[in-house]
Length: 54
Image 1 (cartoon, helix red, strand yellow):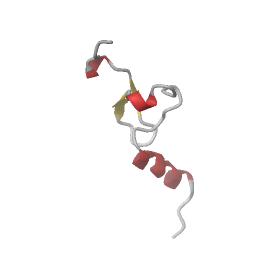
Image 2 (tube, helix red, strand yellow):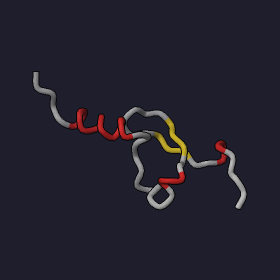
Image 3 (cartoon, rainbow, N blue to C red):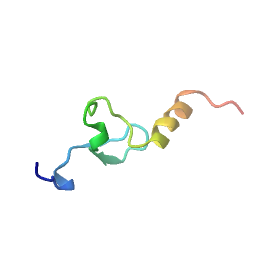
Image 4 (cartoon, rainbow, N blue to C red):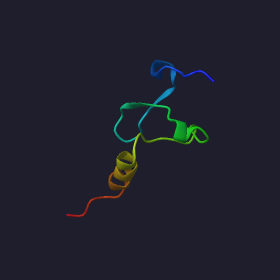
């Protein structure tokens, strides 16, 4: 199997930070479900959804 160039990989926009992120091998089986670029952004979604109490 030939290596693919990073520019040829599919990209998505992160639902939390809005930045583009590229396909990774670990997301191969569930690329259609991936919404966030990192664990940090996935954790930040919880803070946005729940109202802050001050």
